[in-house]
Length: 324
Image (cartoon, rainbow, N blue to C red; front, top):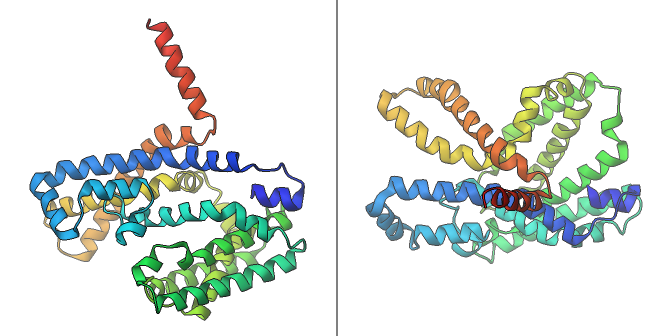
């Protein structure tokens, strides 16, 4: 958004130093802390024999898995999901995008008319999907699965949606229409239904289906902002808070639930799907959200201020002064 504002809306010029500084200070501390917490918890719960078995099964140590994860190279080097925080495989893809983002934004900005930019974006998505499918025929599928090539279309879509968002000044739109509520519902259902067909990222993409999903993703976004009912629902305090701490939930939900669900199921001797569902909905979910809120409040939220390293250093110096 800062780049698009600068190129087309007279915004302040973003510098590369500032861009990368904001990414690092915002994303790195919560990720490193969550990864180290999960690593030490695994060491304690697995014990020495468990760690040895992990090495035998996977061919590398848990510490090597940790190192690769902290360097955002687990998928690239080991071609497996991270064992510390499995969902963080997508954060590694995001990290690859950040390296190329300023260069891609510069190319995108060469088209001054938004219609031309949309056409360039659309054909870029098609080209990226065709290239990904072609490479899957000649390259190890796991290597493609954990590379930006496989998902660049989604990031291009993000640029397009952001461009349209700024052009139409959606945040300033006062006229909320029920039409967009219908768009939101149909788009949400489309994303949910087609998700089952897109689970295996090692297989070639069905391009028409993927394009349908891209349209649906856009419909969810714009329907959420422009719908008369959906905009009110997603503006509620609870959903806004959950949305605000989605990065923390992303990092912690799986490590927490992988521990709690099997333990409680075994202790309570649950066997039916319905009982496990209610256990997850009314016990696991509130506990997960509570832990995530604490992490968000004390770790992630302070990191949203780009000057937090300076403030932290000042606090440390002040503490030393008063205790000297």
